[in-house]
Image (cartoon, rainbow, N blue to C red; front, side, top):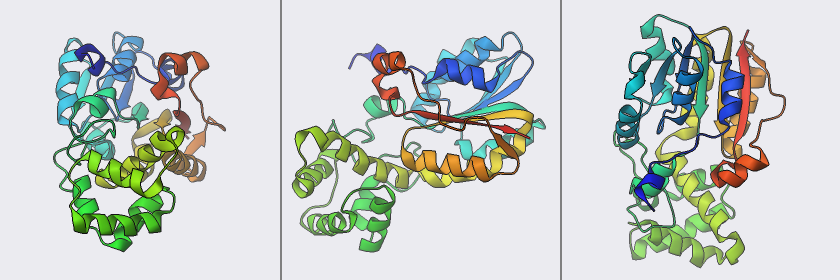
Length: 294
């Protein structure tokens, strides 16, 4: 992959994000998932010359790239090198309430293709999958040390088919040889499931996703944000979340509808247009939900 492609990440549902966040000048916004800075830049441009953004990013490499890309906005942008689970804590330190919070829960092309941490099953890389090196647990640790019960929890929660039998197979395989690289796991998936070619990628994606969710505490982090973020929103402030798989979307839908502090603005999720999906195939599974602080 060319370097310019590696560092390019087209922000998903960009027009829709700006519309539903109601981006205007003189307002405060949070981008809880800065990534390579696409959404943040658009918010700063749409709210020029006075809107301010607080952006959170916990991956060391993307943080460095985004800082350089967005340096022209440094008077209106504060980048916080932490996960979005710290939004409430950090915004309360600022002594403000904000007009909108965005969480784009997808992975950037850079993380998938350029981090070397085993996020993709299409390259032979170490089974790491940590979004931040501050985390201790790697994917290989899960595969090589978790008990049968723990592995079953990981893969059943991740909706991996035949999870119990698959876990028992992994336990046998790791006795023969520890899992070290992504291709070790790919081989195990192929051997156990023997999937037809047309279904292989989807199956591998689900298995890798289940591990990544566990390594990075993704569902727990989302649950915490869903509880805490409304506390830092002004009345009328918007909470916009873009998810990419059913586990996240169900959490968001349930939390928005049951939270008395919020009014749901999107009865059905907003999805990319056919034009956007053609232009950016990685957007095809995106679902955006929006709620407003009462």
